[in-house]
Length: 202
Image 1 (cartoon, rainbow, N blue to C red):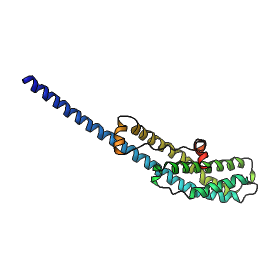
Image 2: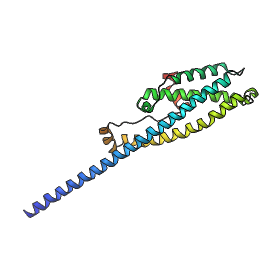
Image 3: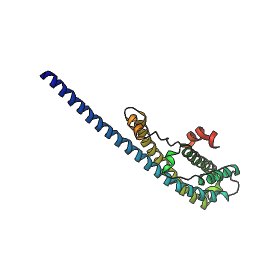
Image 4: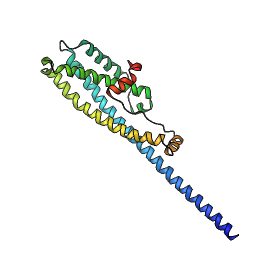
C-alpha cells in the first residue's frame, strides 16, 4: 500500500515537472519567434526607408543622364519604365505578408540597379558623362544608398533565416503553427531575383 502511494506521488511529481518544462520551453520558443519576427520586420522597414531614398535618387539620376546625347536610348527607356512601375507599388511594413508584391518590388529595384550599372559602365569610356556635373552629382548621391541597400538586405536575410528556421523546424514549428506564424521570403537581389521572376514581371 505504501509502495503504491509512493509510486503515485512519483508519477504526479514527474507530470508536474514535465508540465513546467513544457510551459517554460513553449514560452521560450514563443519569445524567440516573436523576437526574430520583430527584427525581420524592423530590418524590412529599414530597407523600405533606403528604397524611398533610392527611388528619389534614381529620378535625379535619370534626369541627369536623359539630357546627355548618345546615351543608349533602350537603356534609358527601360530605366524610365521601371521608375514609373515602382511608383505604383504601395510599400509599407505589410509588404512582408504579400509574397507576389514583395517579389515584384525586388524585381523592379534589381532592374533599376541593372540599368544604372549599364549607364555607369558606358561612362567609363564616355568623357561627356564623366565630366558632366549633374551626372556626377546624381551618381555620388546614388552610390552610398546602394551600399546601404546591400548591408540592410544582408541583415534582413540573417533575421529571416533564423525566423524561418524557428517556423519550419520541430518542435518550434509546432508552436509557430499554433501562433499562426509562417516563413517569410528572403530578399533576393540582382541577377537572382531577375532570373527567378522575369517570366512573371517582365
